[in-house]
Amino acid sequence: MKFLADMGVSQTTVKWLNKQGFNAIHVRDVNMNRSLDAEILSKAKDEGRIVLTCDLDFGGLLSASGESSPSVIIFRLENETPANVIKRLNQVLQESPDALIKGSIIVVEEGRYRVRKLPV
Image 1 (tube, rainbow, N blue to C red):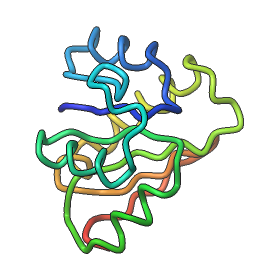
Image 2 (image 1 turned 30 degrees about the vertical axis):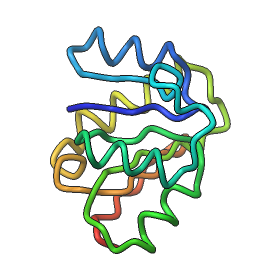
Image 3 (image 1 turned 120 degrees about the horizontal axis):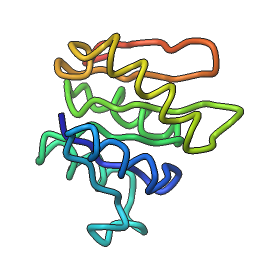
Image 4 (image 1 turned 60 degrees about the vertical axis):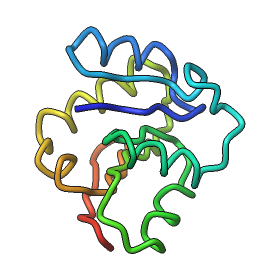
């Protein structure tokens, strides 16, 4: 799996993903730190990447588009430290890889996560 991390996601999370054998980049790495959410979604779709974000706008844009990709993981955590984000992300990756591959919006909260298959 390949990932594109938005500004609210730490570089530490990106490094962790790469150490796990995934292909992960941060929007800063590709000079997209000031890009519109729609541009980030477009890049992710073009490159087959899953978007990691804390921004609910990505889910709205993707839902309104009627598209079946890219998948988006939205973190809605009280504790947004890299360690907690990585812990919750690891759970999603272990339990829901098929949903990510097929196209989903996954909202990750402290005690649970919700999967909505695309298109919504």
